Image (spheres, rainbow, N blue to C red):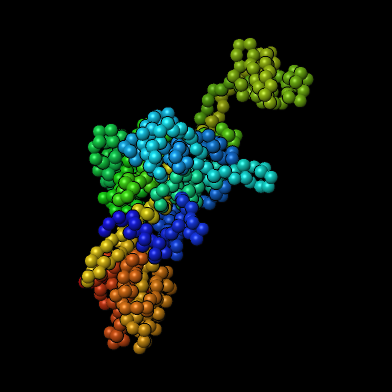
Length: 573
């Protein structure tokens, strides 16, 4: 088959799936256009994701702006720390991703190395652009966010969002009310994100504008038992845990129940979404034997995360490619936004029965405080009520000014206080999908070539539900009423919500080949027997087998074949 990447991308460009953006102006690395078939297929992949997360899981979808105010990304840590290690070739002046060069020359987990460590490793390596020796090269941080201005006159700084998640976190207080103040709940978002990649050289794998599909699931920090875990307790899949990586052992095929009980996976929520992600990717067309789940090593896992896994898909050219991240992010994000915004970012959880606690309360002597502090007396009184006094008094701060309030200016009383519940800051479970990487994986895994009647047959063996065209309808000849019957069948399929393509151009074999290349799973041919007995042939793309059925049964039969209820082999019988 040769270089499968070149074969896949040649077909993708020629048949209208994907091509370079603004090609007439020389294109720009890190950006792609989805053509007519690619855009259609991408929407179907996104809708498959929605079937899992919105329909099945019940997490409503929201849509936030792709431009965010600076304050959001200061709180999230992106302004300060969202950077990659960069260097510049002293010969060709090309900017390069330092850790990628190191990894290409055998340095594992180069992303966690410091700038001096990377500089030392790169000294004798060649530049990937001009092949000149890099020498004593400086490695420095480059922030990946695209900066912009909001409004005229540079009044407010903003950024193109580097991920969809922060919009969900910023909306947390609204979402809590929408979900009636009950945990667990979740929200999802599919949309564009932007990262100003240093040197994107990997086609659809590394883009500066890309589509993410993320779910943020808010759970009680002390209750991480998934209510539907029974769905996946016996689900087995390959897990490459920390121990397997450190001992160079192969992935461990294990059930989710055993993965949690043995401590390989932190909790049921993480295990549940590992299994759901595995099922979704396979359903989308990823080859199961080319899919694994790798746990983040201690030196690469975020300091705040309880557990983190990557769904990695194998590519013949790019090796194992991170495509989905599943993480328990604890309360890091909500805590950060609470600290910067002043909102609580908590959920009030009522107790089953009211509790009483003995508490000390401070009662200020306003008869003295009022005349002494005048305009600040109310603020001082409020600060004093929340303070923890010492033996002689208490020091408080109001508007940055310090005050010492002597003990004779207040009194302390103890009383039973009614406690109806507790404010809880949830933990966040986050499955985050790269849709463009999924798309490339499907293209590569589903592309095939075979010799048929002395010619190479190129075929995309796409699952029917994500194929851009789901059925093709051919009249054997464009005369004698065959074309009219074929057009009526096409219309009947469209009325059933099936995307069908009518084609009467060229020999029937050529028409089959055109549809095979774009992944159309089924083709209906109207021939002269149709005029005699009102039957047509249905051809299966993968086996190329054909079977005759009644013309009037075509719409329902196609619907069952596409949704997987009916298997083509059973249709033959």
